[in-house]
Image 1: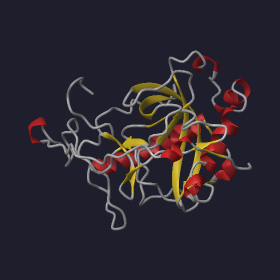
Image 2: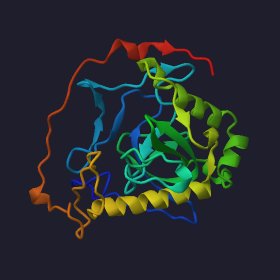
Image 3: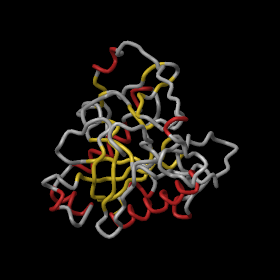
Length: 267
């Protein structure tokens, strides 16, 4: 993305996937230990990062003991898409959640909203969210001191960062329960898939994204993401800078008191 120029976090930021080195670009949406639920917009032109809303109110994640907010840097892989019209045979009938692929970055550096960084792919966790496949890729910033020690992916994370993966899975299982929802389930028995399998998922979702921006996906069930972009000249959504109009209006409101509460659950 050119500095100072409008671009889409979803479509214009290159994925830059290196399948051999198992690295890719990540867009940080939610820095570690924060609670405001920011995400790349699927509805607005050029897909800016906005705070998610529900029933007209800004969304925050609750504190689930022993965690505060999101216990990791959270974001998405650009130029990927979990297709709601498609299910791989190994996905056991679950279809994509209509979003870019989510990334959990477990490095020590605190992320910044909108930061684009290169991460090393370590593995993947298959979360089932409201009946949809919602992949959570596990990754670490390539500049993190631990990155060079995790060359065997998930196996090295288990050995050198004990407790990290178990706690991450527990957080994803429980984080929606304070809102009255049941605990989340996982495909593949909650097992972490290795880095090679994670790269296969990225390649598949990048291919589905290419079909999306080329107008090759038809869906009568869900509204497909906005595909306006400024770099993909061969696609229907390509726009020149002079034709782009952005809506600056949004929802405002006070921070709810509930974000200071702590919720406890048995594992």
